Length: 140
Image (cartoon, rainbow, N blue to C red; front, top):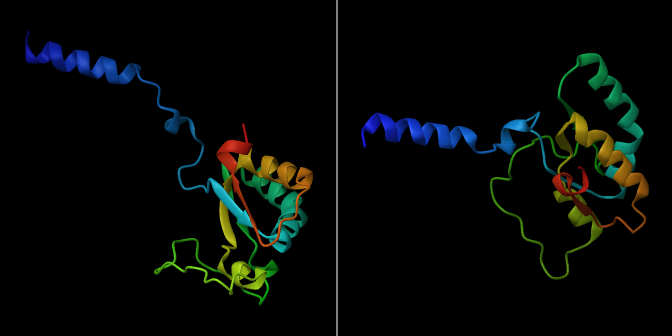
């Protein structure tokens, strides 16, 4: 068997494999949102404006900035990972402590924006101190 035959077979085989990641509209979008009751209510208040922004711009994603809704004003301004992990101690697990660790900016793709709003509207359990929502699981 010649090298070109093996190479050609390998390429054909790899091309036939499904690549679900390539079907995604957005490679930089967040798959998980962690919200407390303030940021969830804030997201629902901003939802119509975010949807209008998506419709006008015709982009596959929108930046959701909830920093004005976080206690203390500006909230978290970075979207990245904290430089050092923060571990909650035994007695300091108050909602204010957890709230200060929540991110306030997310990049959410078009299909997940409405899904997240619907999920939060239907969510009946208490949200505080926070809930973690895996958008890949709750949004079809």
